[in-house]
Image (tube, rainbow, N blue to C red; front, side):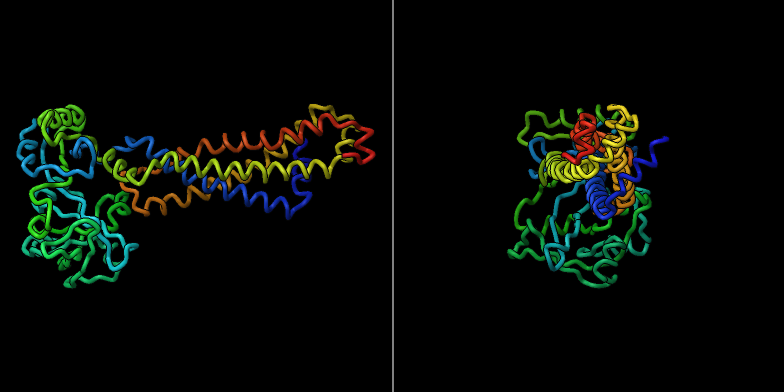
Length: 388
C-alpha cells in the first residue's frame, strides 16, 4: 500500500483521458452485468422455488403445434395430478404492434382452480367475468398503461387467429381487473388479459377442438418428473406425442424461440470487450510513453525491474477494477427494470455479477502487461534521454 499514492497520482496524470476511459469501461461492465445476469437466468432455470408444483404439457416436437382437447380427461386420470387446465397462444396487440398484450383464452373454472391463491380478484369482478361471454379480466398494470376502464370495450388484433368472418380483430368487454399476490410475478403478469376459451374456440376459423398446451398442478412437487413421464407415456406413439416439463422450463423455452439467447449475449459482449481492449490498451501504452523519463528516474532511485512492472500493472488493475465495480453496481440497480420487461420465468440473481470482477482483472492484465514489460525493460540512459 505504500506505493498507492504514486499509482493514484500517475493514474490521474491526464484527468480528461482517465475519466473518458473510466466511463467507457463503466458502460461496458454495465452492459456485461445486465446481459450476464439474463444469461445466467437462462442457464439456471431451476433457481428459486416458485412454481415447483406446476407442469406444462406441449406437443413433443414444437410448442407451436397444438394438442387435442380430448387429452384433458386422460391427463386428469394420472396419479399425482391435482388439477388441469388448457391454454392457447393468442398473440395480440392493441392498436399498434409495439403495444403487445399477453392475451390468454382460459377455462375459467379450471384455470382459477389451478392458480388458486395466486390472483387477487374481487368477487364482483369474478362473477361478472363468469357471466359475460365476451368478458375480459385485465391486469391492473395493463389497465393503467393504456388508460382502460372497467365497462369499456377493447379491440385486440391477433397475429394468428382469424374469426369466422375472416377478421383478425377481436373485441372484449372489460368486466374486471386482477393483480397477483407474489410481487416477483408482477412484472411477468403486467401485460396479461384473460378471456373465455369457449368464446375463442367457437369464434376462430380454424383449429377448433385443439389447445396450445396443458398446465397441471401436482400434489407432490418432488414427484413432478415422475408425473410428467406418466403423462407423456399416455400419448407415446400417438399422432400427437407430448412433452411435459416444469413451468419455468416452458417459459424459458417460449422466450428462446426468439433465437439462441446465450449466443446473442456472448456475441454482443465479445464485440464490446474486443473494442474495449484496443481503447484501454492504447490509453495504457500512451500513458507509459509519456512517463519514460519518470520511469527512468525511478530506476535510478533504486526501483527494481519487477517493482516497475508491478507499478504499471497496478495502475492498469486499479483503472479496470474501479470502473468495473461501478459498472456492475449500476447493472445491479437496473435488474428490477429488466425484470419488469416481462421476462417470464426468469429469476435475475446478483450472483451472476461475480464473474465480472474476474473479467476486470483479466482485462487489466491483457492491456497492462505490454506497457508494463516495456517499462521493465527500459534502459536508464535511453529513458533519461527521452528516447521512446
